[in-house]
Image 1 (tube, rainbow, N blue to C red):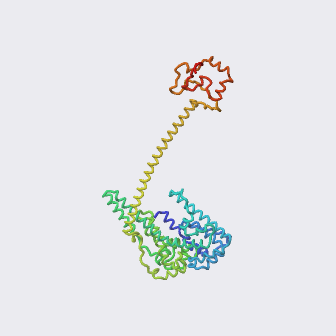
Image 2 (cartoon, rainbow, N blue to C red):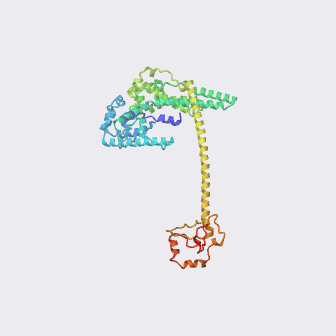
Image 3 (cartoon, rainbow, N blue to C red):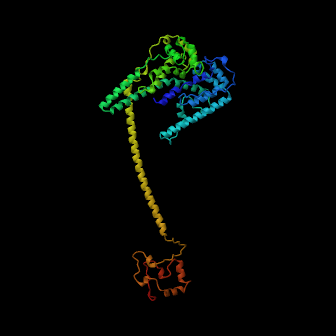
Length: 494
């Protein structure tokens, strides 16, 4: 158990449960018994300071306290609370009075519930993102079922069922607090012993022997302390009466003692006020300056004492000790002639079997962590490989861009396109070069005729040449297709 956990445990004081808070709203302040009213001067009334909010340690602590704060402002609800039995509150009868509170209070409670539902949805979304499921659709309505302290079917308005759920959940969660605390402390003790054993494995034989001797010496030194009185017994309370209050133990009076240590004057001993009574006993066992004394164990010892007194004295199990309950307890044999109190060093927090199971669990956790490390290493290698491929593609792309830039610098332009309209024959440039393979010019006949040979043809622009042009025939030998030579016929031949 960490120090943060212990501090949280001690903070469950004036606000240990929903029920405790509701009861405390109605309690009147008691006048300290040492005050002489005849010497009090009349002064101007001062505004009452709001009590400091105490964290219950519940994950819905803020929502719980805000609901309480607004219910406190409704006079009808306060009156019903004053006349409602504690058992009836636990059974949900007080929750039905929500229908009669003012409209303003109900409106504010609706707003608080909407804010709480929104907070829970945000937490669910954040959890999904951490687990790698940020692309998966989240069914908030289904997941809200796990939060039993509110009605998830109606996320908009605060109804009687919401108040009933809140009372039951807070009561149940806080009643299970001690059980959870025992388990946390047990894990702390087992882990401490496990770490010690692992440290011994790193030492040679001589160093190990010295370490074991030092450990035994510290245990013996810690156990050497004055006798510890039984918590809540007459001897224990008389010691506080004498040493803390400076009063004669022979004049011990239970009723006066109760009023002296009811620090907030509400007529009850809450958990903080009870734990304060055990400080003198704890100082006999623990000293923060001593190497052998573990302050985590000191806090566990304090909570054990408080839990024991609550079980013995708190008859209605409301986690508060009233004056009547306290006075009844002072008449019991356990108060007058108690058994000796066994401290933590006399009661090992775990069994050998539990220790073996705990170590097996640690080994399994280590194997799981090692496997995760291997998987992460493989993922890293795969990512590095993908990065290399991306770098290679980047280089290729850069080379292609540079090649295009060089082409632009050389100003290389593609040949112009040739457009043919109708039956027009495109002008052919470089006839020899236009011949297909195998049709090269071998005689002057294949060359362009001289200009004078074309003149007779030009003398008849509207004759046969025109007809030939209309039929798409070549007008000169110059226009013959490749491989077709002109045939000279004798006019006298048949």
